[in-house]
Length: 345
Image 1 (tube, one colour):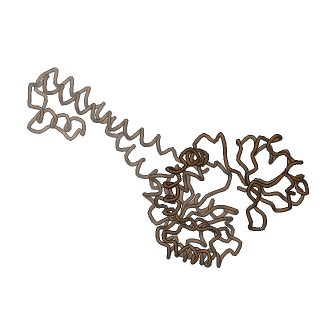
Image 2: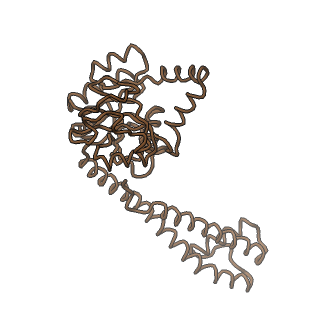
């Protein structure tokens, strides 16, 4: 993941340090003049500023020998600190603008190279959960976010996240996002009509694109599917079902939630696609014995759009079968490496 080439945190620290040094200098000098010259705090502060800025004394100036010695020490220190502070301030402003321009240019270059990436349209509450889930999966699939509120995006995402700022329903934004080269798109806007428009536009640019769309109304699900969405998710329906199941079958619901939401991935749901030359093709579930060999539980096989749940031992694996399994990450990785199958990322 890209990082900003300028160390912004270091520049902030330098700025805070110089502000602290200046405040300390003003405080110590003001207090010193109050006690040495026996004048009011305001007059002491006035004398401090006049000394530091070297603009000459007017009606108020040190009258004692000790005050003059104090001013002699204060003037070079103040000039040095103020000069350095002005340099840091100007440097901060210039570098801040420069870093943004360079960062935007580098990000545009990175986006122009994207291939096989995931595009997320919108960044509301649902899309924020999408971001967290994709981050937890730790896949090497680049993700590009399109939203019209950069401040809201930067408040959640980590530094270096690829993004385009603009209207996700704008065709030009999808073109800039290289939707024709993307592997998947998530339409997560709160408005169903916007998600339908994004789906239609994206499909017209990439017929093979996998699209997962958010739906707020149940009657919009069919419209989104007709528009080209591969899958339609209704957060309200899913939330209602989970609430009901959490009361009826709390233990089972807790297990599934822990499986999906747990930050420590002791177990994970995985999809494994069998290629034509896979050693599993042509063998039965019993012959392969995935559970014993890899420590993974085979729960279903997706074949030609149909789901075979809890497959029998006599079931024969076929080309392009998608195995849906539950197991630890090490077991999944072992299956991928030793059997030469491709993990669907």
